Length: 366
Image (cartoon, helix red, strand yellow):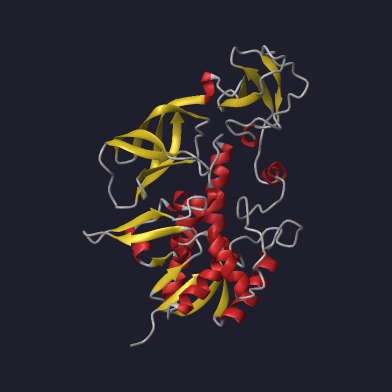
């Protein structure tokens, strides 16, 4: 019987490198695939694509697998980056990693892998896939709660999950690092990548400046007093405290003589107005409910209305909520406790215990 062929997305990072080794150890025929998703300015100081490719090739040599590079830059620009810019231009704050997983890593990459004769694909994501008694595939949180990435994977379909392996889902990150060191992988000490894939470590405002048209406008308090000028609504996100540009503004003094910080609370695209409020607990920063659109359910259909758990941002503990299915394209969430800085454009992802049910893009909050 021939070995099953698995194509592993190898990014040059530790997680995908150890994934390739684990699968080879488990008896699969493993092929590495390095995805190049961004071409603009790939020679500048912030782009790590060349080094990542060198690392991926070096690891493939140590592990003993073939590797090839594939260019998805056109697909990325069309399916991910253009949507990213549209959302920012509309005053929302998108999460491109969610879209990248759904459109590139588990669509363009999956299609390419299957054209190579693969039986399965694998990535270094921290998540798990399980087939239940009814034969459906479930997306589960990783055992390492601090690294769980199911939030970013919530748009995956039954067909995508059926063809995907997540070997790191059962492991702790410390184990993964230990394996990389034991194997003397050339990238064993490499830091995990942070931030948005195509921006790297470059200053975010400078990056957006190149692609978005923007118009300065008034910064107002919750009672309508103009206290400054913003540089363009796209450059601010709800809950933002630093970099608002009101450094000289006197803050209301607390009893201890200290002033409450100012936070971005609302963006009015129609009037091009940025509203800021003082104090972390200001009512404008707290949302008892939200509505979401562009919804996607892992099972292929919506869960029943009722009590579930949700995340409205990646680095957040699950919070109790009540799901209210509005129609095929929208759902509502009512929170047990009002949530802070719920941000249109971000993903609201639902859970039933460890099972990630799917989610949608936050449309309105409050």
